[in-house]
Amino acid sequence: MAKIFLTGASGYIGGDVLHALRLALPKCEYSVLLRDKEKAKKISAAYPDVRVVVGDLEAAAVIEKEASQADVVIHAASTNHIKSVEAIARGLSAENRAKPGHWIQISGASVLSMPDIENKTFGQASSSVYSDLDGAEEVRALIKRYSSKRIVDNFVTHLPPTAMRPRTALIFGPIIYGRGRGTGNRRSIQIPELARANLQRREGVQVGKGESTWSNVHVADLSNIFVKLVEKALGGAEGELWNENGLYFPMNEGMLSFNEISQRIAQEAYNLGLADSTSVTEIDPSDADSITPHAAVVLGTNAKQVAQRARKYLGWVPEQHTLEEELPLAVRAEAERLGLADTSKL
Picture 1 (spheres, one colour):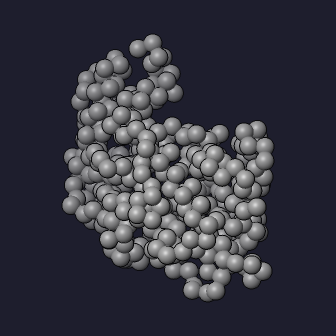
Picture 2: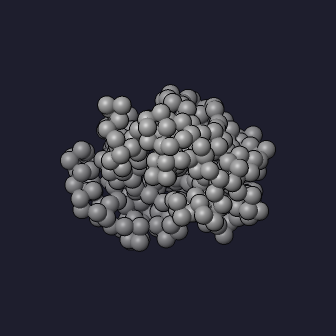
């Protein structure tokens, strides 16, 4: 029976990935790393056959042991925790393994934002669009150039070429939207946080001119890439899937600038009677981070993707509703969460 070790099972992405994997591959043996006992109870109640491993990302020995016994490791808990990543690498390349393991690592599309961050061009448009297939070398160059900031991406893409080198894949999440299906956090960040700020201020906000743009994907479509990669791993598929080629951009076809997103959120809040107008106020990057952590980066930079690799090699096609359709739902969900209204009666 194939063994899958997952971190981040109580989080937004990891929880949804576990849900999707259990539906698609119910016969696999799953173990998950959790530090919170209450969250562990929820996982055990929902998935009685999933083995809970107690520990946090600092528990290097625990992570290494689990990785050494796994056929596939999915690290969905963090994009920048190097100690846990090093432990996974040691476990997956252990000398007592019968064969190399597979490692699917969550990353973030902010790697594409590094030039904006460096030049402090927050809120400004960019013509740069990056591909994970035709433009993969450019993406690898970005990781190398900004290796001190993209320490996990750089580590995963530069593992030593030993006989037991694990097969790796990096998934660069853009704006991720939609309600998660896990047992823990089901709320994403960028869109709900913009909705929250609008509802609490009773007006919309954007970083600078709001011309910056990120690609986007529904969380269930994102999880489907993880599932398809696990299926390929368990089937022994090689080729253009892993290691230096294992760069995956999950995205829908359409993109909205943050100005367009904020305008649509402001309009919905006004329609619900939860804002005084449909106005959107420009805020400085220095002020943005006081509204939500890292807002200057996640709401004020560009990260435009072309998702070629998953479509070509995994047969992946997004199936969920679009970001445009999500925005009114996100405003209503935040209004409910904040106790501002029972939107089911609006």
